[in-house]
Image (cartoon, rainbow, N blue to C red):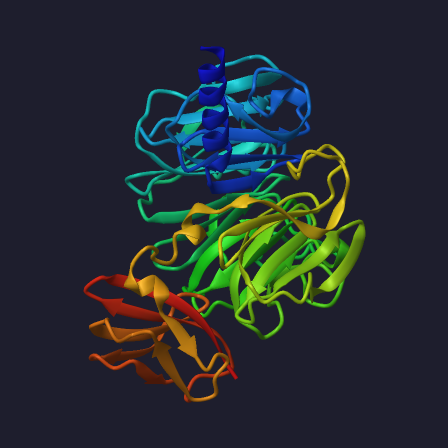
Length: 456
């Protein structure tokens, strides 16, 4: 009987650790993540109980937080985290010195605490001392510390529960910065900012004497006139945003070169990072990470205890799919095959690798669900290959005799469709494409297979 129980425990343990990751976030010296079974995990520094496991003991490896299996998305900022469950409820835990966790007067909350009774929350962003959230109806809400007007309510009064910001119902993206600044994008592609502007991080061009920064702004105010913004991620005092053409732009504090523009001069307006297009990006305290269409992983700012002002290649590997999280000198990135890697400062075990050693070279951490399931298996489609690869002109599908091809399409690393061809033809000419990495999507009655190739 004992032997049988041991086998069950072993199998259960293996199944638990075999789960893949859906999301990972870095806060200040800690990390949190959600697995594909809806469980919540945390690791690293545990001051203020920010790991949410009911203790204040640091953990160098991921530990499960509670028993809930319906976590949907998370956001880590400073020492306070937000979590959203599949039932639309909102939760918070960690530091509460600024009243950013409604419903408790304690300075810390060591387990996730439900915020209010609403069940229609959609997106969340933790700025550490202030919080932002969007509801299903597109309305924007804020609460917490408000000394610089980060809540966008037109005043500087601290708010202990979610309050609606204005009356607009078309908010689609948010990012709360660590020192009292907020950013949001509307459905029309316009970018908005408010709060602290000490280093020009509002992006509105305001100047204050000989300094870059201007006065604080107490309500959401549009940044420039462009209407092609699609994503934004704020560090403590600097911001990086992406446009529809996949270019990256940055502004604010430029200590350690964290704007990635080759200087250490602060900027009060968005400035493009180089001329390349980017497939992904993420921002940490004074740093940034990103991937380009060449499949390489880049970093800039203060990382690995050094500073660089221009994006440099982390290594020469060209298999990187995207960077998904950056923290205070930390980075989490995933390869095209779904393998997840951690790198950076690790003093408190914030990389979750079971040690406290800094890792300048990315170390394997686990598997990312959405990347791991990109292709099909156990059928005829899984047997097909491409040749020649790399190619300068025509691609041919090998082992395609049993397939009835309905359509061949080519997408770039951003997912943009660049070529399409209908009919049962195992060849496609890609000569018109610029050099780079692409995916050939083979559509048949049996399903779709995604095959990566290099255009020379």
